[in-house]
Length: 388
Ligand SMILES: Cc1cc2nc3c(=O)[nH]c(=O)nc-3n(C[C@H](O)[C@H](O)[C@H](O)COP(=O)(O)OP(=O)(O)OC[C@H]3O[C@@H](n4cnc5c(N)ncnc54)[C@H](O)[C@@H]3O)c2cc1C
Image (cartoon, rainbow, N blue to C red):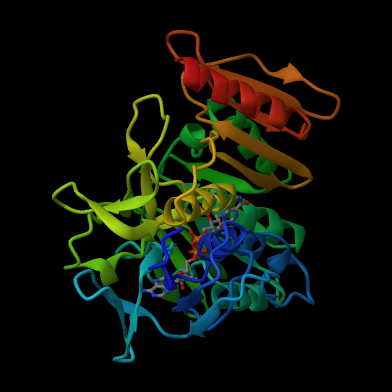
């Protein structure tokens, strides 16, 4: 490890920033770790925000346990990155010098014009607001945007006794992320329990109306709601990097080792990007640099970035893995569930579907209630990618 690496600044206090700190320590970095987090909290587990955090009446946000020894500055945001002076500028006017920097600023909920009146769910503060509503008088909840978070909020709200309608402009939401068969199966889980779906119908606006809301569709029909959640995807938090020279087209572009790339295509020495904000070349079928907004990918990107900063061999790249919960079912996805979809293969308590590219290569798999199969499939997808 370079003796010149004395202070590493981690910008962003989510799981990716924290896991990078832990991996740096494991790799022998004993210098100073300074963390900057815009949220006024220490790193916590975001996936629970749409699950038990909303459901449990006694939920409180607990920081993730760690022994990484990061000196966190919370409630203060980075506002600039000066690569010449090697320092991060903060919105309180101060600066923090670094020998190396980790960009881990994640994403925020996307708000589309006309939908500003809907609640969003990205932070523990958002979850506290939604928790208060869902545990109050029950009524009709409309969820605009049928992604994973929309689906999980629907599960929780339904379980708490709300009437739920979930709407999306896509006729089969989640088909790209989950594969068409599992996506249809997932929405059926909602429908058989009485959750209404209105798919293939774009929403034009969400407006307050008395004590409730009007959700207006593009063809002018309106549904009334007592609460509305707008779950319309996410936007990378990269504004603070404007003018730094780093390529921030849809996140921070990195090389395969996690190092930031400039707009002119050069590698920025000593600056890495991790987690949801990083757009890294991966073994997608078309070989593009992609961002993954998944918990496990945050950890693997953190290990890779820490190895890069400490001069170690990066771990072998495994295919992306994520999960979502729908009622009592756990759905796990490995790789890219695109291409030719197999018939469902029944398992002891669930099922599995496999996906093959045009050349017959295994590109991904979806496993429902069959966690034992995941490591096996993960290895097979990784091997297939290596030999492709
Ligand atoms: C409700 C919800 C449910 C989810 N469920 C699942 C799931 O079931 N399975 C799964 O695989 N994934 C899930 N995810 C995704 C997963 O949580 C994310 O992939 C992961 O948390 C990303 O971590 P991160 O550290 O990259 O970003 P984040 O967790 O977003 O952390 C980034 C941090 O940086 C801070 N920040 C932003 N800008 C600045 C700045 N300028 N200066 C300083 N700090 C800044 C932010 O305040 C934030 O605290 C879920 C996400 C949400 C929101």
